[in-house]
Image (cartoon, rainbow, N blue to C red; front, side, top):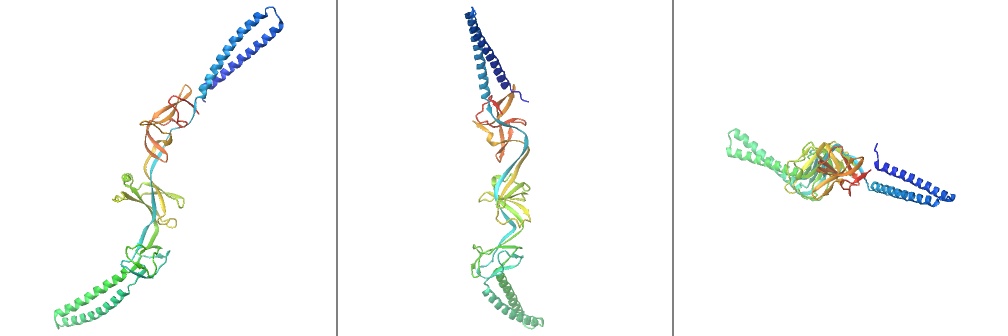
Length: 390
């Protein structure tokens, strides 16, 4: 229980004043009584009482002055709020915006320019690896293929005849080799034309869902031209990607804890950094980080905004204070604390150093100790030695 010396002093002074006032009232009644008696030495008695009255008035004035002084001292104490400093866990996070993507997300294009003649799928369809999604006009290639196939049939017959004659030692070796060369040359040409026809088709390289078909039948498309690719995404495994500034490269590593928030669906999850690139982009001086979320394709969408908070530093026994109570004077940073002396609380100044800050909190590394009473409200105009009260 806290004993308030100032309050007890004020109570005692008030009690003394009341007693003195009471005595004064009694003497006043006596004066009136004696005056009414009409004794011969009335004047002498009156003079004596006046002397006593003047002494009482001086005593009353002295006590009142003392009482007023103590009230002023009590009234000058500054009201504050404080908390006792305890060790706690401090975690620092690097915050960056990223995006959601499928583990497999590709833009399927043809490898040759042409006019779209057929689209075999629609947006939202599930497709398999190797499935033809669309094709371009390859009529000329088809005609050329049929022509070469005819030539190949003739060259094959000529080769077989020359081969039979050569095996019977009839005819010359040159005739046999020429027929063989013609046949093989036409076979290679047929294979080339077939490859060219394949290049005019949109063939999915993955299993997934068709998300975008940016063209229509009859439209001219070309590899690398905007609006020429079909988007196929496999969201069976989801990942979040983000680019971090080069300055964070020494701090981030695979396995670091990360909190991922999705503002569009009001959700936050805990995950781990699954990939931290060791390559710095020379253009924007950033490196890539990824974290995989597993089979959550029904919840997340490709290119959805994700806010990553990567835990790059943790101290499980830190002394942490709000940043706003740290004051600055010249090159010093300090905090006002409470020290108790002779039953009174006084403000004291503690010069501090802090290392990391996050979420409006600072990790103090010197100047404070566990158990210190930190002034959190009312510290702004305090000076060391000022009397404070709760």
